[in-house]
Image (tube, rainbow, N blue to C red; front, side, top):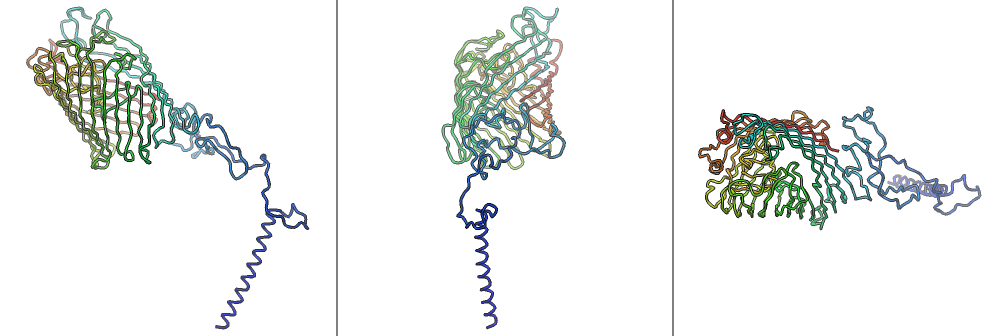
Length: 618
């Protein structure tokens, strides 16, 4: 025990001595750091610590690399200067650069997926100040410029009436329906300017100003007279140009509703709006005041919007600056993860006030009121109550919609008297994803009017629909406008056989035959760049009494026929900058369609259509 105590005491003495020696060495080194031996006389005593000024030209400079993509000049004025070598101010946080790096040593080829791409001002895919990736003023104000060339050409066959009591294109024509071939070409040149102020992509903008002018070229070539214009002297071709300021609006955030980026904003001006998931009731760009926002960490979204509709140009379908006088109010509320994770439900209310008016379109065709029956100006006041849903339940995708239309028509042209409106619509789509394939089936029902002689209109019609359903733009039935005695059996980009003169300029008509549609389809992602869409639709009229009265034919069957379509969508750059779309479709007439469009010397033949669309976007 005594030996252990002596040994411990000796170690403690040595440690204290080493501590004293280390403290003296540290003090000497500190003094040498402040006053290095080379700068002091041997006899100079140690000086106290002091900060020596360093001339600016002697500051440590860090290399400044260029930012990725095309950043353009900085909009941040420098306000700080470097004062020491420990802090280098970089006030424009968006334009902090990266050193040059060619990861694969291949010189950054165009179609290769490369990190740290330098880019240039004409590169829309990588970082670009013209695409809103870098601010143009300060740290929070961005400009997104989008230029689009949208070219479209379509060859189609449609039932085309001749003009036997005036003049025919060919001698000796006696058929009421003549040559069905038509060629349609349209080209839109679109330039969009989107100026907005905000902090980041996850936070709604504080304010936004957007302008979208469009220049349109369209051309139509048909094989019969009185199609491009009721005046047979106008021939069989029509070419038009039109310029429109399609979008112009200002948006401002009114308040933040929660710390989780929930907000309330207002947008005023001509703006796009789709009132539900698939565009069954309203899908348009027009003059409006919109109040919108989110709640509960963006789980809920809501819209309240008032439209004062402008007239449409007949051939380009773009907005004019002429007031139509139609008022539309829409309110909807979305709830995500409703009951099932991944499923969103929506409740909506639509109100359409379409006053009585008298209007000819740009081709000298009467479109308001409908040139059918009692062509007297009339007023519509219609309310729509709707419930829709979209998403997935487990591995099954589902989309559904139900709408109930109630209201009053002061004088329906076909019925010849005022109508109380009570009509319904229902739709459902189920699909299942299997690797690179999606299998779909869907059903659509719009109620028809079973008695056009009473004062109750039960045929369903929309306000301004453009449904992406049962084949959408590839479907013959939905894509084409099929004429029938001065009105359309079905309008372009609409599923409803509403006997309406024009979807874009006419009025809703609730005395119509309605529709039953059964769809089967499959979508194939053949490659990451190429997608194929295939659909088969079987079509029936819900009621045929209206058609029998309208055509003075007491025996019209309900089966319209089969609609076959296939489409290809090709994106060679794996982005939306270049999109090539090809569509092929056919309508195989059923007994009901032949009852309406049979020729004297034979049945109604199958109708074919094909279109190509090239979308180039910067």
